[in-house]
Amino acid sequence: MLGRGLKESLDHEFFRWFHLARYEEPQALADGATWHGFRPQGEKFNRLVTVNLETDDAACVTDVTLCLDRAFVEDRTEGAFARDIAASFLRWAMPLEEQPLLADLLAELGDLGPNVIRLGDVPAMALPSEPTPLYRTYLGREKEAELKLPGKVLRFVNLQARDGPRDPRHDWIWIRLYAAD
Image (cartoon, one colour):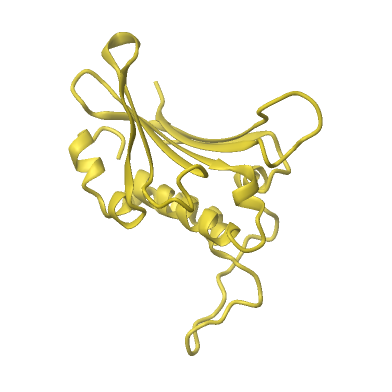
């Protein structure tokens, strides 16, 4: 979605499927940029997921960020929904022709373990032999990781809401794709 118009980005299936709606008015940023914040409308996920976009002065998207509550990501039951929106966010944000660059990460996010019921002869996804740095960060094992892509950077960052021991009830992971200079 980087470089595309805001309206086109918001009209995408990703926003409809997850029922994303503005939770705050757009905020003016430096250099004519504007910040836009969205959350799922449903009460269950409203406080657990945030999608932020930044647009330039021509209303074209320059930066997209998915923020997931760490407790949501690590929840044994609800964590599958966190993986779903993370993978869907990446498919929405990345151009189709560049998505193969994220194949390992998308397979890791889509792997819900051996107890998943599969249709017919559908095989389990092939996973990389070692977890990717982005996936280790998603799991909370690393503080941050980034992948430089043509004209953009994909960055995962774990944020602690306060100092001291890690407490998933107060922490977040940011998955951010932004234009690189």
